[in-house]
Picture (spheres, rainbow, N blue to C red):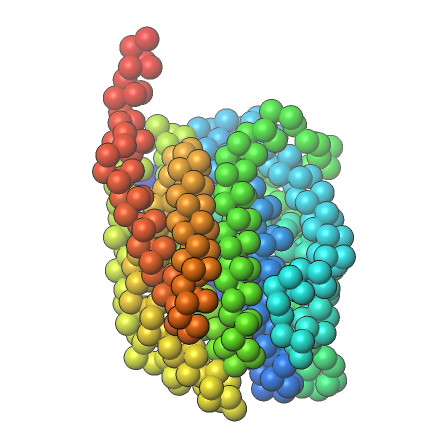
Length: 455
């Protein structure tokens, strides 16, 4: 199976870049989903509806993030068995992942539709945008099964070294999403709920294409209806690797919901400005995100194949590239902050200034954010998911919430919320570097393996 993947042999930098570039392009189109929603709503609908769309990210990830973490665990297990050439365990893991995803998606659909109004009120959503937020979320969560299944199928394909097929499917579904947004909003004049409906339809297309790829491939990871069952051992393996990431995602999302609640308290202008910054940051940070995903798969596959030195060299290359890219991106965002904001909210100068202020506070610290994400990815690929879980919980949740809870009432300015991010990114980066340089999880693979063989 090694010949199927450029990550296990040949040039490290070339293999990682070839694997990461389709992920980058795929992430661009993935980001287009919600960004297209916000852009089109901002041009054709009211400011209240625009604020409703831009303020949805933290709550959506709160409910989806846990199962996204489990999907990460599934990807690590699949990549490890793929690298080791264990066909039987690989097939059982793939089929268990699919059945788990169906159950998780159905559960999330029911929970999201029922809990949306309660959660939005807990977040102190401004009354003028609350009805629109409820509409958007209920249609979004009605189709969350497609989102969960697409992400799981995409994770399986990437784990075995195929990062191109998910890209092709994302391009098609993103184009469809934009066309439907324009049709529903600009032509039909429907409300904000219609952009969520467009996203749902598009996600079902990408899910269908991914599933067809897995059913029709001739490779060992091919899906078969006869084998569609949950294997207890492999489900425990998926949960063992994925549960820490799932808990981490959920608690970080909960912390971000608390942050969003504080943002909401400053009014609609701040909600719109911060929401627009979040969209732009999501796009700008995509090169780093793709390296994060590539690092986890690269390290996991090569450790599964017992290529320890290659895993270390690849992880260092990915870390350096990600940090340099992040700093360059941050500098460019500061230079072009105002015109970028005006692309979305040219009719709201107050919101534009909020977004510019947030950019100036956060963007130069993108290197710390990249370092934290990439070191966490390396750790997960190396089978150490508990370390990033505890680091993220301590720095990005406890410290961030405490920082905001104490300082916002004292200062009463929105920049205090923005400053919480660089502070917590820096703290988590320092902690990760301590593990990187002092622990043997990265430096002792050869010695450990030699001892095992000697015994």
